[in-house]
Image (cartoon, rainbow, N blue to C red; front, side, top):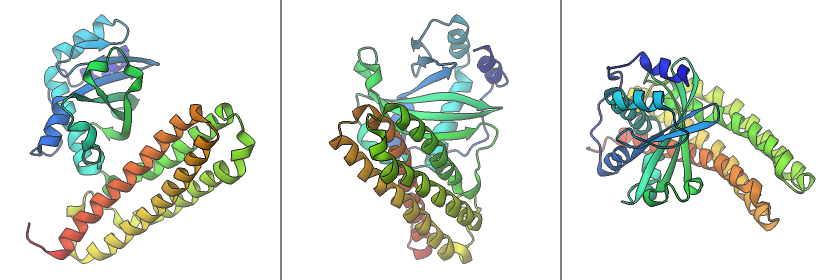
Length: 294
């Protein structure tokens, strides 16, 4: 734990300011007001309220005191995370059903990867069930951030396709240990998921090289049509895996393989998040091409 505190101590008493200012809609404002940090370190999880009071997890006086005394930094960290979601994701908009509920909270589970890079898994839950049924929280997606660099290459799309490979490896391993009738699903579904993932990622990485722009608004006018065409191809690649996993999930439910399904659902949710972000980019590109007044 000391390593995480040492990392954040670089910013002690300071606020991050290396990200764009965004005026929030009511949806984003609610997500910001109800954002809980959960720090994950060495298998332990420490949940903090929006006012930076520890409310779940083992007692850790040093961490609790550090978070409490560094509200200025963590306030800016929240904005960095939410603004990243606004620019490089559709996670908040597509989960408005949960996030607009006055009883819902928004949980960001922070896992340190290396240097100042983090994986963040997002969940939603009812506030009144935080203590009685915490394990029932709903996973809604993930993001990867670098605190020292807000801007991302390829409109932030590379993470979605790289994540496919990572999640496929996890699914294959869990399938071997959790499926009661593994051989029944291996060839028609699990092997096919691996094949589709490899082909999709290889094809996507080639095409991403054609759209190496930080955001939709950085695409030159002369490249708008070609960029939109590439986005449509990437979306179709992602949808092919999306539809196949939907078929696999239905087969698993018929076979009462419920233990494994919850892990497949997380994989499915990540794919769905990618598909929705591609649609968000598509809409913005269509709007720029149309020249319809804002």
